[in-house]
Length: 536
Image 1 (cartoon, rainbow, N blue to C red):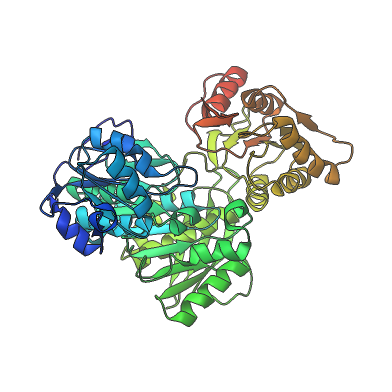
Image 2: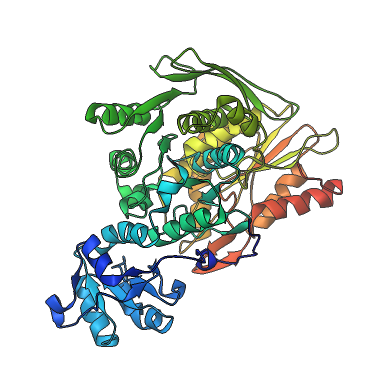
């Protein structure tokens, strides 16, 4: 296994590959030469060794796929791609005219919807690598990252290694880089899987965002098992309605993307999704109920109990053939039991023995930005946690989970993001005011908005629960100051949890991306208060 120090996804490419003739690719994807549109041409025997959608991420010998974007057309960047070594361009007719004007000697292939073609095209170039891996993909509003890391730990224990492509990182063996988004573009995903095959990694654990599903980033990939966590208010700026949001998620549970599915039916959306898949007879689907209730399910959880000592949650998973699996999730709360149970059922359905899955799950702790413990309560120190919860439902679940391991006060440091769903801001404030003892309100990612207006909306929700704003502080200077203030307030029996950003490595303020992460700031604040901090 290699152990290279890679800095970007551009370097996560297979080092060996079989060139594919451009004419074969055109025939495979029903592409036509630009000559039919504007007089250009494309030699069929030209060798293609890779695919890219980003002009800054092109290697010599690759096909550049110039996609129409929300604000600019990718064909504008064809000269940069060709200069970097692209041997041909695939685009739509509007893009073809732009490419022929700027790069008249470059072969151009045309598709009516190039975004829908790029995934299958990339899979063909890289030799359909998902067919040589055991693959799992997780979708849902909250829990994708935690579940995917649980799946990663289990598949790695079973097969000796697992690739990860999700919100936090892109990892193949010993090679890891920061992830630019929850689900990378199709060519990056395909070449990562090809690299995993080349490196002898036997599995892949993927996160599937609703945006990625709609934008065809998973086209060309058919996973062994797809999992659904839940659907909560988020991304309505993109999907407009919750039904539209569910429709996007449902596309993953079709034969084009998965051989089988596991759906959590703890909310109405999961029940609706499972019903839809079953009625259509699309793929086999297992229903999983992780929360107490009477919703019919093939798998269900009982006896969930949180240990105050190590913050782990034990539970019993019951299966359709009278299976009874005793398991331990290394994170607190029912929300993480849902994530853990989903990972267990997904990997069992992917062929992992239950005892192997249970043992691997118990050791899968300290996932970046997901109930990530910075300090553990020891009689002197309080417990410090970083979590990604950034929706009202996720905030509620996170605070309820942490309350179970907190003998003293629960302190929350939080805010809300700019240029996103404004309706959730007062909702976040109300949830925090209801469930936490002390609130420290700060900025998250203001983006182009006035940070004060965002905090005001959050505080409006706080006032709906606490009109006098008792035990509420507003930090207007810098998010790091708010994190430090939360730690300052934390006594030995208290817990402070900072929510909203989790693993994110930047603050986005007025168009600037400022390097920042909650975990090291909290760790340094804890060190300043209590002395050396050992890994929790």
